[in-house]
Each structure stands twice: as C-alpha cells, then as structure tokens.
Image (cartoon, rainbow, N blue to C red):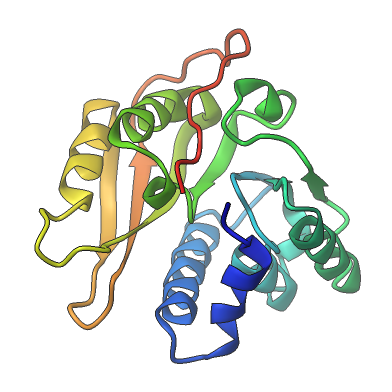
Length: 212
C-alpha cells in the first residue's frame, strides 16, 4: 500500500515535478474562477489529499468565499490537514469527507458541480476504470462545468497516456481547454469544459479502485 502522507512530502521541494504539477493545476483553477466572476460556485475534488491544490487558490483570492467544495479523502492525516487549512483561511464552505471517491454515493448532495477535479487519480487506475470515471463525470458536472485532471507519464517508452483520456473526454461531450505537458517533466495537467447534457447521479456504484 502506498504511504500517501510520505508521498505528499514530494511537495516540499518547490522544484519537484509534484510542485510544478500543483502550480499548473492551480493555474487552471484560477482560469476557471476568472471565467466565472459572478455568483456562487461548487467544486468536488476526488482523492483530494491535503486539499492544497484548491484551498491555496481560494485562500489568496478575495472571491474565494463564494466557492463551496466537497473534498473526498480517505487518509485521515491528509483529510485532517485539509480541514485545518480550510479553517485557517476561513473557508467555511469547504467540507472534507472521509469517503471513497470511487463510489457515486460520495458525491450525493455536492453535485452538479461547476468544477470537477480528478488530480492524482488517473495514474492510479487501470484503463478500464479511467474510462469509467471519464464517462461518469457527466453525472457530476453542471452545464458548462470545467474538469481539471492529472496523469503522470511513468514510462518514457510507452505511448502517451493522455491521448486516450483526451479522446474519452471528447466522446462524453467535453471540450478541451488546455493540456500542460512539458517535455522536461513526467506530469500532464488537462482541462476541459462540459458542453454536453448532464445526466442524473443515479444509484450508488463503484466506478474506480486504486491499483497502486
């Protein structure tokens, strides 16, 4: 089993791939907020870790308080860290639930969301579960919602892993906004906008299981 608390220590180095990935994710969140300057907004973040990807952005923006968010994280230490970070910055609209992000019931009451975050998820799933997750994203997304996702490239000799993911999102009615894939790193950060018709959340089911 992966020690996720130890894994997060990679963020301690500001020049690490993890830190660079975080800055890229945060830039996509900033773009989403700037594109929606008025009214309340709702976020769901799967496998959210300590929540820093989202919470640092909300904390430094004067409009961060209009965002309500559900962060799903099973690791107790990381979930507690996310709660502490939200409290420290007065982000009262943030809830952190110790629930399985791979079950639809974990999203009940928090969707449809205006931003769906799959950061640190796809690289830990087999392709069948990645495809299922992309397909089910339309059940979580409000009309015009943005999706931000990440995927590492662990084998330089293998096919580019994001090609299939991008095609799957297109198949489900999502328009690609950007793909950050610097040659010097192993991370990829994608952003899409939902241009299709939403679907109801539906009955509970498991749609992904971590394999790492």
